[in-house]
Length: 125
Image 1: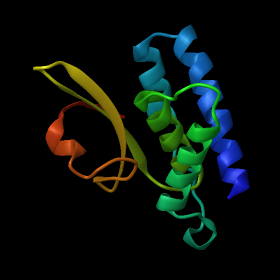
Image 2 (image 1 turned 60 degrees about the vertical axis):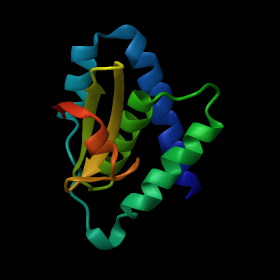
Image 3 (image 1 turned 90 degrees about the horizontal axis):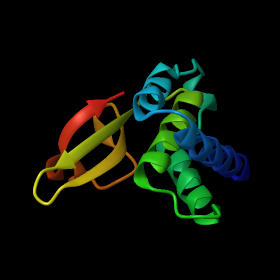
Image 4 (image 1 turned 120 degrees about the vertical axis):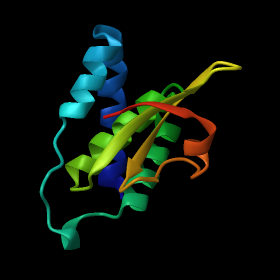
């Protein structure tokens, strides 16, 4: 578990730096292009285990990780370990709010399942 927390923490740092250097379009394209690694299911950590590793890394991170940073790190970590994860970005109109979460096989994995109902999906990558 420590290895995955360290991986997640380093991803949070890399994403934190990248979001200050590139546009949102470049950032989302970069996430979308990250391929899912082919691994044996018996050697892959579980989706919930990897999500817990990202949560732990967020708790250890030196500043609050916002939903986009946390979700992008989760997608990268899941894809690195063979899971076909997608970053989803949604918004509400009134009041305006935006949110990002992760889905695997059309199920929300790093947030409440009702998140999909609360936001209109703007993009999946």
